[in-house]
Length: 169
Image (cartoon, rainbow, N blue to C red):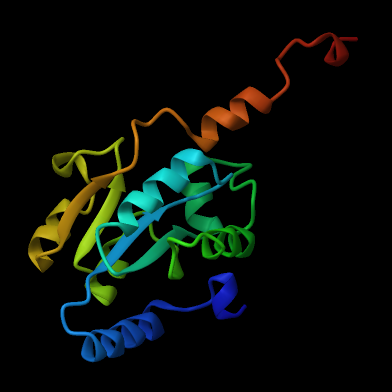
């Protein structure tokens, strides 16, 4: 897996960000995270808003293992490498890095961003990584529009209704 498919690991990305910060003092790094299974307009709005909070945006996205742990069997619908490629195709995304854990703690500690962006389904006080952000002096930014889009809702709408005539015999 190469960098374009999300193969850049946290250690290498941390080195690159360090070099970028040396070259550009005051550079603001934003980290946004999520599963990004079935990319939709809510994701785009979230990521565009997050990007506006800094100069460089890293999207940390859950690997297939952590998506399955969070969303259940049958998820993700789109494999990790394809989700990473889609994210990298967005102009507001500079880097993509995957993570296996259920929270972003290790990634935040490795990358030390200036801003940690989360969607509007969170508030700063409900953010699972709030204490890490506070410990490291990372600004929390709640980004995007009201949570009215979700991959889970799309999956439910696309699933055939139970008891459908085609499934009865």
